[in-house]
Length: 192
Image (tube, rainbow, N blue to C red; front, side, top):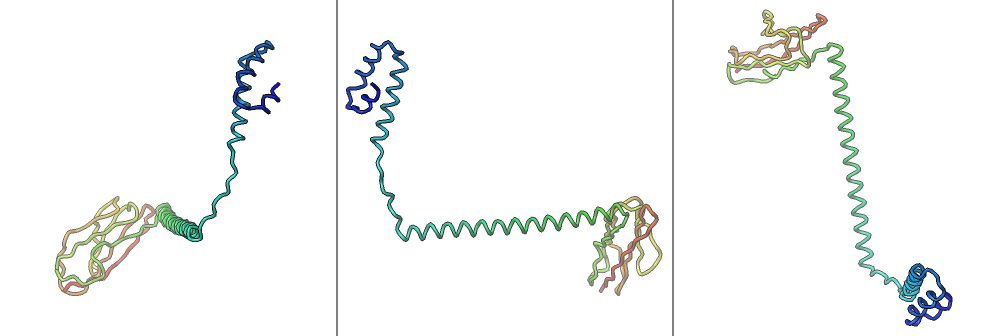
């Protein structure tokens, strides 16, 4: 009976088929749902049309190719930027590792922030020093004179605007670590 129904499909079949099924004492709701599914399938097959896909014009194809090429270049540029960033991060990690080793090994790196190796056109010059880690003491001498201890258990100090005579001067900084090792650094500057 279902096969006959599928073959006819003229529009009046739905009611007649449902009534016939009810006369057979079958479960009418299940049969009705089955019939609806079959109708849906038939209508779907009838409405399918095979259409040819229109070919793109040469200009559109060229534009798409250019867009793909541009996207590929952008991806390549992004990849290069990521590679550069990775190299910079690796370099930073190496610097941090080196600094950490210096601290763990007790090595002190001194930085003379002022005076710098240059000519000052004033007699008042700022002395400013820092260390890579805390020292047991820090001090300095000017023109190879006596050692002046500036601080204890510190990592920096400064002396504001000491008065220097005209001429060339040597400023030497000393620092002691916890293993009684002394580190020193000097700078030569001129006062004019």
